[in-house]
Image 1 (spheres, rainbow, N blue to C red):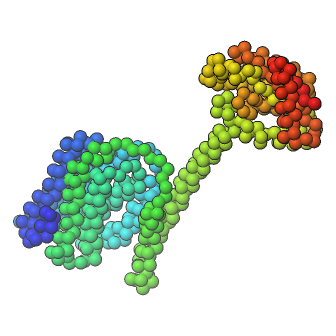
Image 2 (image 1 turned 120 degrees about the vertical axis):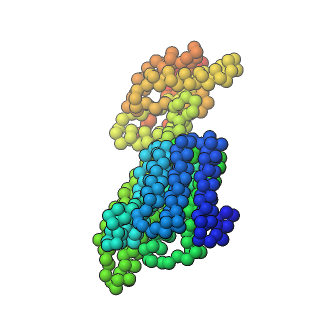
Length: 469
Protein backbone atom coordinates (compact mmCIF):
# COMPACT_ATOMS: atom_id res chain seq x y z
CA UNK A 1 0.00 0.00 0.00
CA UNK A 2 2.82 2.40 0.80
CA UNK A 3 4.32 1.87 -2.67
CA UNK A 4 0.93 2.63 -4.24
CA UNK A 5 0.70 5.79 -2.11
CA UNK A 6 4.13 6.80 -3.42
CA UNK A 7 2.60 7.25 -6.88
CA UNK A 8 0.51 10.12 -5.51
CA UNK A 9 3.44 12.16 -4.27
CA UNK A 10 4.58 15.22 -6.28
CA UNK A 11 8.15 15.67 -7.46
CA UNK A 12 9.28 17.40 -4.28
CA UNK A 13 10.90 16.75 -0.90
CA UNK A 14 7.70 14.92 0.07
CA UNK A 15 8.43 12.37 -2.63
CA UNK A 16 12.00 11.96 -1.39
CA UNK A 17 10.91 11.54 2.23
CA UNK A 18 8.19 9.05 1.26
CA UNK A 19 10.67 7.05 -0.82
CA UNK A 20 13.28 7.01 1.95
CA UNK A 21 10.71 6.00 4.60
CA UNK A 22 9.48 3.03 2.55
CA UNK A 23 13.05 1.91 1.77
CA UNK A 24 14.16 2.25 5.39
CA UNK A 25 11.15 0.30 6.61
CA UNK A 26 12.19 -2.61 4.39
CA UNK A 27 15.72 -2.55 5.82
CA UNK A 28 14.44 -2.35 9.40
CA UNK A 29 12.07 -5.27 8.77
CA UNK A 30 15.03 -7.30 7.51
CA UNK A 31 17.03 -6.49 10.67
CA UNK A 32 14.12 -7.33 13.00
CA UNK A 33 13.30 -10.54 11.12
CA UNK A 34 16.90 -11.77 11.17
CA UNK A 35 17.12 -11.20 14.91
CA UNK A 36 13.67 -12.64 15.70
CA UNK A 37 14.16 -15.76 13.57
CA UNK A 38 17.76 -16.26 14.72
CA UNK A 39 18.90 -16.65 11.14
CA UNK A 40 22.07 -18.52 10.30
CA UNK A 41 24.91 -16.16 9.32
CA UNK A 42 23.02 -13.28 10.95
CA UNK A 43 25.98 -10.84 10.61
CA UNK A 44 25.89 -11.27 6.83
CA UNK A 45 22.16 -10.52 6.69
CA UNK A 46 22.65 -7.46 8.89
CA UNK A 47 25.39 -6.30 6.51
CA UNK A 48 22.95 -6.83 3.64
CA UNK A 49 20.44 -4.58 5.43
CA UNK A 50 23.23 -2.06 6.00
CA UNK A 51 23.75 -1.93 2.23
CA UNK A 52 20.10 -0.90 1.84
CA UNK A 53 20.55 1.86 4.43
CA UNK A 54 23.66 3.06 2.57
CA UNK A 55 21.69 3.19 -0.68
CA UNK A 56 18.99 5.28 1.05
CA UNK A 57 21.70 7.65 2.21
CA UNK A 58 22.72 7.95 -1.43
CA UNK A 59 19.14 8.84 -2.36
CA UNK A 60 19.05 11.57 0.30
CA UNK A 61 22.39 13.01 -0.81
CA UNK A 62 21.22 12.94 -4.45
CA UNK A 63 18.01 14.74 -3.48
CA UNK A 64 19.96 17.35 -1.48
CA UNK A 65 22.20 18.17 -4.46
CA UNK A 66 19.31 18.10 -6.95
CA UNK A 67 16.62 19.90 -4.95
CA UNK A 68 18.53 22.19 -2.63
CA UNK A 69 21.79 22.93 -4.42
CA UNK A 70 20.27 22.65 -7.91
CA UNK A 71 23.39 20.72 -8.93
CA UNK A 72 23.45 18.14 -11.73
CA UNK A 73 27.18 17.44 -11.64
CA UNK A 74 28.26 13.94 -12.68
CA UNK A 75 29.72 11.99 -11.02
CA UNK A 76 28.18 13.19 -7.77
CA UNK A 77 28.80 12.27 -4.09
CA UNK A 78 25.67 10.14 -4.21
CA UNK A 79 27.33 7.89 -6.79
CA UNK A 80 30.02 7.00 -4.25
CA UNK A 81 27.34 5.83 -1.82
CA UNK A 82 25.39 3.96 -4.52
CA UNK A 83 28.45 2.14 -5.85
CA UNK A 84 29.76 1.35 -2.37
CA UNK A 85 26.37 -0.06 -1.36
CA UNK A 86 26.18 -2.12 -4.54
CA UNK A 87 29.73 -3.46 -4.16
CA UNK A 88 29.20 -4.44 -0.52
CA UNK A 89 25.87 -6.05 -1.41
CA UNK A 90 27.62 -8.20 -4.03
CA UNK A 91 30.28 -9.22 -1.49
CA UNK A 92 27.64 -10.18 1.10
CA UNK A 93 25.64 -12.22 -1.43
CA UNK A 94 28.81 -14.02 -2.52
CA UNK A 95 29.58 -14.95 1.09
CA UNK A 96 26.01 -16.16 1.65
CA UNK A 97 26.10 -18.25 -1.52
CA UNK A 98 29.46 -19.74 -0.52
CA UNK A 99 27.89 -20.88 2.74
CA UNK A 100 24.79 -22.22 0.98
CA UNK A 101 26.49 -23.87 -2.00
CA UNK A 102 29.63 -25.41 -0.57
CA UNK A 103 29.80 -28.43 -2.88
CA UNK A 104 31.27 -28.20 -6.36
CA UNK A 105 28.59 -27.63 -8.97
CA UNK A 106 30.15 -26.95 -12.39
CA UNK A 107 26.77 -27.26 -14.13
CA UNK A 108 25.23 -24.53 -11.98
CA UNK A 109 28.22 -22.23 -12.45
CA UNK A 110 28.19 -22.65 -16.25
CA UNK A 111 24.44 -21.99 -16.44
CA UNK A 112 24.78 -18.85 -14.33
CA UNK A 113 27.62 -17.60 -16.55
CA UNK A 114 25.56 -18.29 -19.70
CA UNK A 115 22.69 -16.18 -18.38
CA UNK A 116 24.92 -13.37 -17.11
CA UNK A 117 27.05 -13.48 -20.27
CA UNK A 118 24.03 -12.93 -22.49
CA UNK A 119 23.08 -9.79 -20.56
CA UNK A 120 26.72 -8.70 -20.50
CA UNK A 121 26.65 -8.48 -24.28
CA UNK A 122 23.54 -6.28 -24.19
CA UNK A 123 25.07 -4.15 -21.43
CA UNK A 124 28.26 -3.66 -23.43
CA UNK A 125 26.50 -2.70 -26.66
CA UNK A 126 23.87 -0.37 -25.18
CA UNK A 127 25.32 0.80 -21.85
CA UNK A 128 29.10 0.45 -21.60
CA UNK A 129 30.46 1.06 -25.09
CA UNK A 130 28.52 4.32 -25.60
CA UNK A 131 29.92 5.56 -22.29
CA UNK A 132 33.50 4.82 -23.34
CA UNK A 133 32.95 6.82 -26.56
CA UNK A 134 31.17 9.76 -24.95
CA UNK A 135 33.24 12.96 -25.32
CA UNK A 136 31.21 14.78 -22.66
CA UNK A 137 32.26 12.52 -19.78
CA UNK A 138 35.43 12.75 -17.75
CA UNK A 139 37.48 9.68 -17.02
CA UNK A 140 35.95 9.48 -13.54
CA UNK A 141 32.48 9.88 -15.03
CA UNK A 142 33.11 7.02 -17.43
CA UNK A 143 34.30 4.77 -14.59
CA UNK A 144 31.18 5.54 -12.56
CA UNK A 145 28.87 5.05 -15.54
CA UNK A 146 30.45 1.68 -16.34
CA UNK A 147 30.45 0.66 -12.67
CA UNK A 148 26.64 0.51 -12.46
CA UNK A 149 26.07 -2.07 -15.24
CA UNK A 150 29.03 -4.11 -13.97
CA UNK A 151 27.43 -4.33 -10.52
CA UNK A 152 24.11 -5.23 -12.13
CA UNK A 153 25.77 -8.04 -14.11
CA UNK A 154 27.40 -9.39 -10.96
CA UNK A 155 24.07 -9.35 -9.14
CA UNK A 156 22.40 -11.02 -12.12
CA UNK A 157 25.06 -13.76 -12.07
CA UNK A 158 24.50 -14.31 -8.34
CA UNK A 159 20.73 -14.41 -8.85
CA UNK A 160 21.12 -16.97 -11.62
CA UNK A 161 23.47 -18.99 -9.41
CA UNK A 162 20.85 -18.97 -6.65
CA UNK A 163 18.10 -20.11 -8.98
CA UNK A 164 20.06 -22.97 -10.59
CA UNK A 165 21.83 -23.99 -7.38
CA UNK A 166 19.16 -26.46 -6.25
CA UNK A 167 18.20 -27.11 -2.64
CA UNK A 168 15.05 -26.15 -0.81
CA UNK A 169 13.34 -22.96 -1.99
CA UNK A 170 11.30 -21.74 0.93
CA UNK A 171 9.35 -18.50 1.16
CA UNK A 172 12.37 -16.45 2.22
CA UNK A 173 14.34 -17.69 -0.79
CA UNK A 174 11.55 -16.74 -3.21
CA UNK A 175 11.10 -13.32 -1.60
CA UNK A 176 14.82 -12.58 -1.77
CA UNK A 177 15.09 -13.76 -5.40
CA UNK A 178 12.02 -11.74 -6.41
CA UNK A 179 13.43 -8.68 -4.67
CA UNK A 180 16.72 -9.00 -6.55
CA UNK A 181 14.79 -9.38 -9.82
CA UNK A 182 12.73 -6.26 -9.08
CA UNK A 183 15.87 -4.27 -8.26
CA UNK A 184 17.62 -5.37 -11.46
CA UNK A 185 14.55 -4.61 -13.57
CA UNK A 186 14.38 -1.07 -12.18
CA UNK A 187 18.11 -0.52 -12.67
CA UNK A 188 18.06 -1.71 -16.28
CA UNK A 189 14.92 0.31 -16.99
CA UNK A 190 16.61 3.52 -15.82
CA UNK A 191 19.84 2.70 -17.70
CA UNK A 192 18.09 1.94 -21.00
CA UNK A 193 15.90 5.01 -20.59
CA UNK A 194 19.05 7.13 -20.41
CA UNK A 195 20.63 5.33 -23.37
CA UNK A 196 17.68 5.77 -25.69
CA UNK A 197 17.16 9.35 -24.40
CA UNK A 198 13.60 8.63 -23.35
CA UNK A 199 12.17 11.48 -21.31
CA UNK A 200 10.45 9.65 -18.46
CA UNK A 201 7.41 11.44 -17.08
CA UNK A 202 6.24 11.41 -13.49
CA UNK A 203 4.33 8.16 -13.90
CA UNK A 204 7.22 6.43 -15.69
CA UNK A 205 9.80 7.55 -13.14
CA UNK A 206 7.49 6.57 -10.26
CA UNK A 207 7.01 3.15 -11.86
CA UNK A 208 10.76 2.58 -12.10
CA UNK A 209 11.25 3.85 -8.55
CA UNK A 210 8.57 1.38 -7.47
CA UNK A 211 10.87 -1.41 -8.65
CA UNK A 212 13.44 -0.36 -6.05
CA UNK A 213 10.80 0.05 -3.37
CA UNK A 214 9.36 -3.38 -4.08
CA UNK A 215 12.86 -4.77 -3.76
CA UNK A 216 13.37 -3.13 -0.35
CA UNK A 217 9.98 -4.39 0.80
CA UNK A 218 10.63 -7.93 -0.43
CA UNK A 219 14.01 -7.99 1.33
CA UNK A 220 12.24 -7.02 4.56
CA UNK A 221 9.56 -9.67 4.00
CA UNK A 222 12.30 -12.26 3.43
CA UNK A 223 13.82 -11.35 6.79
CA UNK A 224 10.47 -11.64 8.55
CA UNK A 225 9.78 -15.04 6.96
CA UNK A 226 10.77 -18.03 9.19
CA UNK A 227 12.65 -19.51 6.22
CA UNK A 228 15.40 -16.90 6.65
CA UNK A 229 16.62 -19.07 9.53
CA UNK A 230 17.98 -21.74 7.15
CA UNK A 231 18.57 -19.72 3.99
CA UNK A 232 22.32 -19.45 4.55
CA UNK A 233 22.71 -23.05 5.73
CA UNK A 234 24.64 -25.46 3.44
CA UNK A 235 22.51 -27.52 1.07
CA UNK A 236 23.26 -30.80 -0.64
CA UNK A 237 23.82 -30.52 -4.38
CA UNK A 238 22.96 -33.62 -6.37
CA UNK A 239 22.58 -34.37 -10.05
CA UNK A 240 19.43 -32.53 -11.02
CA UNK A 241 17.02 -33.13 -13.84
CA UNK A 242 17.52 -30.80 -16.79
CA UNK A 243 14.03 -29.32 -16.50
CA UNK A 244 12.09 -27.65 -19.30
CA UNK A 245 12.16 -24.18 -17.74
CA UNK A 246 15.94 -24.38 -17.49
CA UNK A 247 16.19 -25.46 -21.12
CA UNK A 248 13.95 -22.55 -22.17
CA UNK A 249 15.96 -20.08 -20.08
CA UNK A 250 19.33 -21.21 -21.44
CA UNK A 251 17.99 -21.31 -25.00
CA UNK A 252 16.73 -17.74 -24.66
CA UNK A 253 20.09 -16.63 -23.24
CA UNK A 254 22.09 -18.20 -26.07
CA UNK A 255 19.76 -16.66 -28.67
CA UNK A 256 20.45 -13.11 -27.47
CA UNK A 257 23.73 -12.78 -29.37
CA UNK A 258 22.37 -13.74 -32.83
CA UNK A 259 19.19 -11.70 -32.19
CA UNK A 260 21.32 -8.69 -31.27
CA UNK A 261 23.25 -9.22 -34.51
CA UNK A 262 19.98 -9.20 -36.48
CA UNK A 263 18.74 -6.05 -34.71
CA UNK A 264 22.02 -4.22 -35.32
CA UNK A 265 21.98 -5.20 -38.99
CA UNK A 266 18.37 -4.07 -39.37
CA UNK A 267 18.93 -0.72 -37.66
CA UNK A 268 22.15 0.06 -39.53
CA UNK A 269 21.07 -1.20 -42.98
CA UNK A 270 23.10 -4.42 -42.87
CA UNK A 271 26.06 -2.75 -41.16
CA UNK A 272 26.91 -4.08 -37.71
CA UNK A 273 28.89 -1.51 -35.71
CA UNK A 274 29.32 -3.93 -32.80
CA UNK A 275 30.22 -6.95 -34.93
CA UNK A 276 33.35 -7.77 -32.95
CA UNK A 277 31.49 -7.74 -29.61
CA UNK A 278 28.68 -9.86 -31.04
CA UNK A 279 31.14 -12.37 -32.54
CA UNK A 280 32.96 -12.67 -29.22
CA UNK A 281 29.62 -13.11 -27.45
CA UNK A 282 28.57 -15.85 -29.89
CA UNK A 283 31.87 -17.71 -29.48
CA UNK A 284 31.73 -17.48 -25.69
CA UNK A 285 28.11 -18.68 -25.64
CA UNK A 286 28.97 -21.57 -27.93
CA UNK A 287 31.88 -22.64 -25.72
CA UNK A 288 29.76 -22.36 -22.58
CA UNK A 289 27.01 -24.48 -24.14
CA UNK A 290 29.60 -27.10 -25.14
CA UNK A 291 30.96 -27.06 -21.58
CA UNK A 292 27.42 -27.48 -20.20
CA UNK A 293 26.84 -30.39 -22.57
CA UNK A 294 30.09 -31.99 -21.39
CA UNK A 295 28.95 -31.69 -17.77
CA UNK A 296 25.55 -33.13 -18.71
CA UNK A 297 27.20 -36.05 -20.52
CA UNK A 298 29.36 -36.78 -17.47
CA UNK A 299 26.24 -36.63 -15.31
CA UNK A 300 24.46 -39.11 -17.60
CA UNK A 301 27.51 -41.37 -17.57
CA UNK A 302 27.63 -41.28 -13.77
CA UNK A 303 23.94 -42.11 -13.56
CA UNK A 304 24.35 -44.91 -16.12
CA UNK A 305 27.24 -46.33 -14.10
CA UNK A 306 25.16 -46.21 -10.92
CA UNK A 307 22.23 -47.88 -12.67
CA UNK A 308 24.52 -50.54 -14.11
CA UNK A 309 25.98 -51.22 -10.68
CA UNK A 310 22.51 -51.38 -9.15
CA UNK A 311 21.38 -53.73 -11.93
CA UNK A 312 24.35 -55.99 -11.21
CA UNK A 313 23.53 -55.94 -7.52
CA UNK A 314 19.89 -56.77 -8.22
CA UNK A 315 20.91 -59.59 -10.56
CA UNK A 316 23.25 -60.96 -7.93
CA UNK A 317 20.57 -60.68 -5.24
CA UNK A 318 18.08 -62.41 -7.51
CA UNK A 319 20.48 -65.34 -7.88
CA UNK A 320 21.57 -65.59 -4.24
CA UNK A 321 19.90 -67.42 -1.40
CA UNK A 322 19.32 -64.81 1.28
CA UNK A 323 19.99 -67.19 4.18
CA UNK A 324 23.11 -69.08 3.11
CA UNK A 325 24.55 -66.75 0.51
CA UNK A 326 24.80 -69.63 -1.96
CA UNK A 327 23.41 -69.63 -5.47
CA UNK A 328 19.63 -70.15 -5.35
CA UNK A 329 17.49 -72.46 -7.46
CA UNK A 330 17.08 -69.87 -10.21
CA UNK A 331 20.85 -69.49 -10.54
CA UNK A 332 21.29 -73.27 -10.46
CA UNK A 333 18.78 -73.84 -13.25
CA UNK A 334 20.59 -71.23 -15.36
CA UNK A 335 24.07 -72.62 -14.64
CA UNK A 336 23.40 -76.33 -15.19
CA UNK A 337 22.63 -76.18 -18.96
CA UNK A 338 25.69 -73.98 -19.48
CA UNK A 339 27.84 -76.51 -17.61
CA UNK A 340 26.53 -79.30 -19.85
CA UNK A 341 27.41 -77.28 -22.96
CA UNK A 342 30.95 -76.69 -21.68
CA UNK A 343 31.41 -80.35 -20.83
CA UNK A 344 30.14 -81.38 -24.29
CA UNK A 345 32.44 -78.91 -26.03
CA UNK A 346 35.53 -79.75 -23.94
CA UNK A 347 34.88 -83.49 -23.78
CA UNK A 348 35.39 -83.55 -20.01
CA UNK A 349 33.33 -85.38 -17.37
CA UNK A 350 30.70 -83.61 -15.28
CA UNK A 351 29.30 -84.83 -11.98
CA UNK A 352 26.13 -83.68 -10.24
CA UNK A 353 25.41 -84.42 -6.57
CA UNK A 354 22.27 -83.76 -4.54
CA UNK A 355 22.81 -83.32 -0.77
CA UNK A 356 20.16 -83.46 1.95
CA UNK A 357 20.68 -82.82 5.68
CA UNK A 358 19.66 -85.89 7.65
CA UNK A 359 16.74 -85.58 10.10
CA UNK A 360 16.53 -81.82 9.57
CA UNK A 361 12.85 -81.67 10.54
CA UNK A 362 13.63 -83.40 13.82
CA UNK A 363 16.46 -80.89 14.44
CA UNK A 364 14.05 -78.00 13.81
CA UNK A 365 11.43 -79.46 16.13
CA UNK A 366 13.97 -80.03 18.88
CA UNK A 367 15.99 -76.76 18.72
CA UNK A 368 13.66 -74.35 16.89
CA UNK A 369 13.65 -72.76 13.48
CA UNK A 370 16.29 -70.18 14.33
CA UNK A 371 18.72 -72.98 15.18
CA UNK A 372 17.70 -74.73 11.94
CA UNK A 373 18.46 -71.58 9.92
CA UNK A 374 21.80 -71.27 11.67
CA UNK A 375 22.60 -74.91 10.84
CA UNK A 376 21.83 -74.33 7.14
CA UNK A 377 23.98 -71.20 7.05
CA UNK A 378 26.94 -72.77 8.88
CA UNK A 379 26.73 -75.99 6.83
CA UNK A 380 26.80 -74.02 3.58
CA UNK A 381 29.87 -72.09 4.75
CA UNK A 382 31.67 -75.26 5.93
CA UNK A 383 31.00 -77.19 2.70
CA UNK A 384 31.99 -74.25 0.51
CA UNK A 385 35.39 -74.15 2.23
CA UNK A 386 36.05 -77.75 1.14
CA UNK A 387 35.25 -77.21 -2.56
CA UNK A 388 37.36 -76.16 -5.52
CA UNK A 389 37.03 -72.72 -7.14
CA UNK A 390 35.18 -74.11 -10.17
CA UNK A 391 32.64 -76.16 -8.18
CA UNK A 392 29.11 -74.78 -7.75
CA UNK A 393 27.11 -75.37 -4.59
CA UNK A 394 23.52 -74.11 -4.56
CA UNK A 395 20.64 -74.28 -2.15
CA UNK A 396 17.98 -76.11 -4.13
CA UNK A 397 15.21 -75.82 -1.58
CA UNK A 398 14.67 -76.33 2.17
CA UNK A 399 17.50 -78.52 3.48
CA UNK A 400 18.37 -79.81 0.01
CA UNK A 401 21.51 -78.64 -1.82
CA UNK A 402 22.84 -79.26 -5.34
CA UNK A 403 26.53 -79.59 -6.17
CA UNK A 404 28.03 -79.36 -9.66
CA UNK A 405 31.57 -80.68 -10.04
CA UNK A 406 33.23 -80.34 -13.47
CA UNK A 407 36.22 -82.37 -14.70
CA UNK A 408 35.97 -85.02 -11.97
CA UNK A 409 35.27 -88.77 -11.88
CA UNK A 410 32.98 -90.76 -9.59
CA UNK A 411 35.70 -91.94 -7.25
CA UNK A 412 37.07 -88.44 -6.66
CA UNK A 413 33.55 -87.09 -6.05
CA UNK A 414 32.81 -89.82 -3.52
CA UNK A 415 36.04 -89.00 -1.67
CA UNK A 416 35.13 -85.30 -1.75
CA UNK A 417 31.69 -85.90 -0.25
CA UNK A 418 33.17 -88.18 2.39
CA UNK A 419 35.45 -85.28 3.40
CA UNK A 420 32.56 -82.84 3.49
CA UNK A 421 30.27 -84.91 5.71
CA UNK A 422 32.38 -84.50 8.88
CA UNK A 423 32.45 -80.74 8.25
CA UNK A 424 28.69 -80.50 8.83
CA UNK A 425 28.21 -78.45 12.05
CA UNK A 426 26.29 -79.34 15.22
CA UNK A 427 27.14 -83.05 14.84
CA UNK A 428 24.74 -83.42 11.90
CA UNK A 429 25.22 -85.46 8.74
CA UNK A 430 23.93 -85.49 5.18
CA UNK A 431 23.03 -88.00 2.52
CA UNK A 432 24.00 -87.54 -1.12
CA UNK A 433 23.12 -88.91 -4.52
CA UNK A 434 25.72 -88.69 -7.30
CA UNK A 435 25.19 -88.89 -11.08
CA UNK A 436 27.82 -88.64 -13.82
CA UNK A 437 26.60 -87.02 -17.03
CA UNK A 438 26.53 -89.47 -19.92
CA UNK A 439 27.11 -86.79 -22.55
CA UNK A 440 23.59 -86.98 -24.00
CA UNK A 441 20.92 -86.56 -21.34
CA UNK A 442 19.24 -83.29 -20.51
CA UNK A 443 19.86 -81.31 -17.37
CA UNK A 444 16.49 -82.46 -15.98
CA UNK A 445 17.36 -86.06 -16.68
CA UNK A 446 20.77 -85.74 -14.99
CA UNK A 447 19.26 -84.13 -11.91
CA UNK A 448 16.51 -86.73 -11.73
CA UNK A 449 19.09 -89.57 -11.63
CA UNK A 450 21.07 -87.85 -8.87
CA UNK A 451 17.88 -87.20 -6.91
CA UNK A 452 16.85 -90.84 -7.21
CA UNK A 453 20.29 -91.88 -5.91
CA UNK A 454 19.79 -89.54 -2.95
CA UNK A 455 16.58 -91.31 -2.00
CA UNK A 456 18.40 -94.65 -2.14
CA UNK A 457 21.08 -93.25 0.19
CA UNK A 458 18.43 -92.08 2.64
CA UNK A 459 16.60 -95.38 2.39
CA UNK A 460 19.81 -97.26 3.10
CA UNK A 461 20.22 -95.55 6.50
CA UNK A 462 21.37 -91.97 5.64
CA UNK A 463 24.81 -90.44 6.25
CA UNK A 464 26.14 -91.96 3.07
CA UNK A 465 26.69 -91.43 -0.67
CA UNK A 466 24.81 -93.38 -3.34
CA UNK A 467 25.77 -93.55 -7.03
CA UNK A 468 23.11 -93.21 -9.71
CA UNK A 469 22.59 -96.09 -12.10
